[in-house]
Image: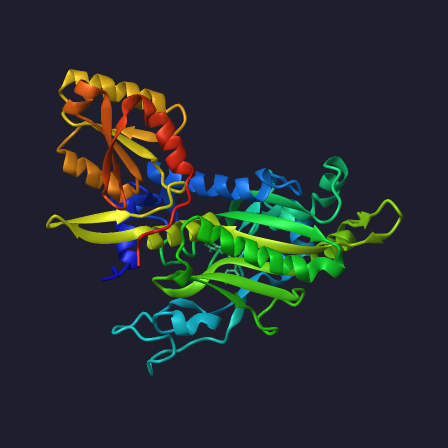
Amino acid sequence: MAVDVTMDKIVSLSRRRGFVFPSSEIYGGMGSTYDYGHYGVLMKNNIRSLWFQTMVQERDDIVALDSAVILNPLVWEASGHVGGFSDPLVDCRTCKLRFRADQLEQSACGRKPSKHPGEWKECDLTEARQFNLMFQTQVGPLEDSSATAYLRPETAQGIFVNFKNVLQLARRKPPFGIAQTGKSFRNEITPGNFLFRVREFEQMEMEYFVPPADAERWYRYWVDARYDWYLKYGLRESMLRKREHSAEERSHYSSGTTDIEYLYPIGWSELEGIANRGDYDLTQHTQHSGTKLEFVDDDGTRYTPYVIEPAVSIERIFVAMLVDGYDEEVVADRERTVLRLHPAIAPVKAAILPLIGKNTDMAEKADALFQELRRRHVVEYDDSGQIGRRYRRQDEIGTPFAFTIDDQTLEDGTVTVRDRDSLAQERLPLDGVARWLGEALEKPWRTPKA
Ligand code: ATP
């Protein structure tokens, strides 16, 4: 039977195994802000580097950028964020809670039993007003309005304002893209659902500049390419869908937006968005900065490229991968929790386990193998406790392979390799393990989860 994966189970596993902690916990936490522990950091690094590998390393047409978090405030005037990056907010005068006016159906009122805001006769909601989601800060020692700046709410604008630099210095011509990853900040009105909606998150965005006539084709291309990326890294097709926005839902400058949605425990929700932003951003920055952001071809034709933008946060991928991988099953009368992560996403690639930790011959051989493998992969050495328990610890953090050094290793120089998903065990020559692991990690992987 398919396991019921709730957000509570994901939060609890993340906490128990040190993936994610509530931030500033010893001070009572800091609403919807999280810190990542060892395995969380490793998994985030994997997600980021696989994105980078696909978007930049394996392509000729996309270059990298790392722009600042705090930009000239005029950038945000030009982009429309100062005037329009807001959500409609309502306050309840009775329970004193705040809600997003466009999400009342998904919000819970403060009274018990919980209903949607506005459904109790005591509910007294204010008119909706616009609330800007950008965090403000002061730059320099003067606390006057001229020193007001913003923490970026998206990484994209840092790309647009560098368009000319990249065009000239990286000698690119459309179609070409600029990719960057980095922290973004939004003062969300109703954060929550674990990492799904947080106030500080790491975005991975790519702006792909194309001749206007080709924009529609590239937009479709990127929707498909990004969807396929999730399948490649193990998300189940039944849990993914593409949802194209209607004209009313789209931003005024967008002529096409598609969300890749995942079936999170909270229901189908946006994992990644792909938008055809037209020439809006480059035109806005040209007008506000006075610097022409356009492409001039060798024959003198000039135009403002259109932009296709795939944008996602590591957090939303992280949650989707944990939900997709989480499984519970009974093996030999004992329950095990296992994270069936794609091996490339798994924080630890293999565990090295001497069957009897106190046996110096076994420990020596296991340590030599550990030292050899750690030069290429994140691997773990564990010699404490019963072997069954050690396997279960690794299952819970999603380690795809475990190599056990036992009596037979001392006799014939072979080790057991155990597969996390099938639990199959086979013996391999000790001196072939590094090669075997390298090849196993390169193989395509599909989840056995229903
Ligand atoms: P939503 O409608 O869920 O608020 P959005 O449409 O405002 O999202 P975009 O501005 O398109 O989101 O941001 C691009 C991507 O950044 C999203 O697809 C999502 O992956 C991620 N993202 C946006 N806001 C958050 C957040 N508060 N926490 C985590 N990830 C986020």
